[in-house]
Amino acid sequence: MIPNSFRKIRLELAREPGHPEGEAGHGYDLLAPLDAEGRLDPAEWRAHRGECRVRRFRTGEADQIGTLSRRPGGSWFFDYEEGDEDDESGFRLGDERFVPGEYVSLRERDGKMHTFRVILVEAP
Image (cartoon, rainbow, N blue to C red; front, top):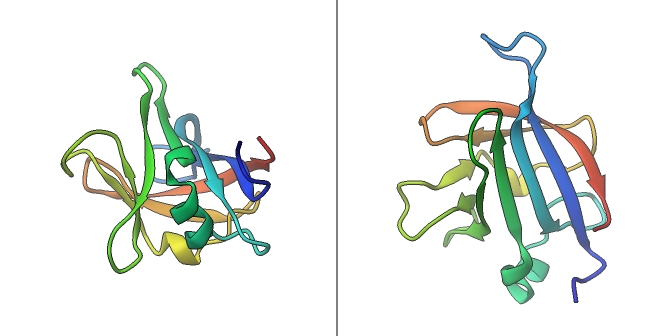
C-alpha cells in the first residue's frame, strides 16, 4: 500500500527557446513522497523506494518508465535502466517544492538543462 505522503506529480516543459509557450507533450509523471512543504521526502523514499516511479513522455516517442533514485550525497535522478548513461538528474531537486506553478530544472539525456513547470500534484 502506498503511504499517504505519496503524490502524483506532473511536470511539463516550461517556456524556452524553441518552445515559447512551453510544451505539454514533453514532460514527466512522478509518483513520489512529499513532505508537508511539498519537497521530496528522503526518509519516506528510503522506506518505499520501490514505489517511487517516473514516466518520461514526449510527443511522437515511446514513454520511458523508470524509478526516482538518489545518489550518495543526496542528489536525485531518474533511472530508466541499468547503468547511468540514460539517467536524468535534477538540479537541486531535493530543495525544490513540488507545488503547482513552481519550476524545477532537469538535465536530460541530451546533456542540457531544461526547466519544467509543476502542473499537477494530487493524491494517487
